[in-house]
Amino acid sequence: MLQVYNTLFRQKEIFQPIYPGKVSVYVCGVTVYDYCHLGHARTYTSADVIVRYLRWQGYEVKYVRNITDVDDKIIKRANENKEDFHAVAQRFTEAMHEDFSTLGLTLPDHEPRATEYIPQMVAVIEKIIANSHAYIGENGDVYFDVRSFPNYGCLSHHNIEQLESGARVEISEVKRDPLDFVLWKLAKPGEPSWDSPWGKGRPGWHIECSAMAMDLLGEHFDIHAGGRDLIFPHHENENAQSQAALPTKFVNVWMHTGFLQMEKEKMSKSLGNFITIRDVLREHEPEVLRFFLMSSHYRSPLIYTSDALHQARQALVRFYTALRFLPEVKHPHQTKYEAQFVAAMNDDFNTPVALSVLFDLAHEIQRLREQDINTAAQYGALLKYLGSVIGILQTNTEVFFQAGSSVDSVKVEKLIQARQQARQNKNWVEADRIRDELASMYIAIEDSPQGTTWKFLK
Ligand code: AMP
Ligand code: ZN
Image 1: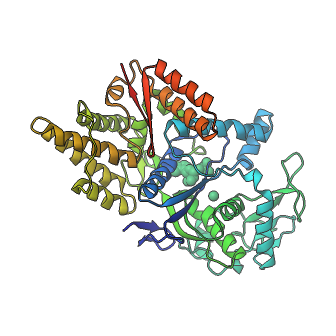
Image 2 (image 1 turned 90 degrees about the vertical axis):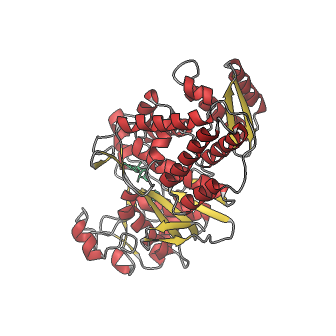
Image 3 (image 1 turned 60 degrees about the vertical axis):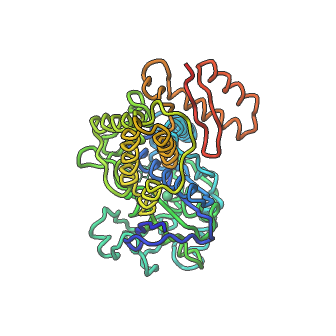
């Protein structure tokens, strides 16, 4: 049985979806004002593994990952560049899509942009005001009244006094309590703005996720996730304002990923200690980065060093060496390896333990290779199959070993993604053109329910 750690109760609990067989997942997305860094890659690769595993377990998953396309940082960047804030958001959204596609991240089913959900946000704020949990400050902005909400602090496990003394909260004359946060902010001259019952302005950051999640997943849904920096204030506020608007429970399970760190500090744009995904992918294959990101449990911190990436490549070399020169056969069912792999993943998506099971399997393949090539081949097929569940070991072995020589695997992956997009859009002509382009590079592709695999034919 799948157990998942819930930040709300600070413990693992048996996962029970609201509707049997279906799981609704909302992951807070990127604020698009710069290139994505490895910290983003960590959180979204964790989300990707969770979604893939739930689907493999047979759940019908609805996965939503938003885009914050209006916010102070985007507006500041636009002013610095003397361009429209939409143009900044659009440019970095495209860059994010490129990076995430190269990393092989599962496409969300919905990718709502905050600017497209303003009416829904206004409607949620109206409900919060009607339920007497928000007020209009002296400056005309609408604030959430934290003292009116008895459970405020339940997600970060602190009461209001502890939060006030521990957090950097803005003291302001216009708010009743320093922790009160803005739901609707009136526009200053030259700022982007939308009409509302409180005047022209824009939404506060927290309200966007409440409104988009409720609109796409319903008022009560299964999983809400993000990096652990979002526990307070973002998710605490989101939870409070949603509960203040709704008669129902909002989220069942809150999940948070540990930080990707540079030495002892969180990698972040504001600290300036970040390395972008695209910079790393100039030197390393996407699978190496993905493997590194899964090598520690999603809730644990993970320290980036270039040596750790080299070790990740070495680990992949061991796997691909085990997969090399094996005849193609079907994988066996009901093996102890699959049972151990499932037990690890059912234990709050424990990828490091799941990977150690795959290492045992690789070791067994090498042991059997000389004496019983048929069983070795079956185990090889099993290794690839279990690898596919977490999005690794799908590269053709010879391509893996030639990486950096004749095949540009990043380009191949991009073309495959573009073909998938074309197929989704029913643009068969373009899909066929991409297949031909791949064929001219001696790349053969094969589609299956698990996705598209490719082989280098030379
Ligand atoms: P941002 O674009 O800063 O709003 O962040 C988008 C998502 O990436 C949030 O869920 C953050 O918690 C997550 N994130 C940002 N930096 C890191 C990091 N160093 N490690 C893990 N997750 C991060
Ligand atoms: Zn959010």
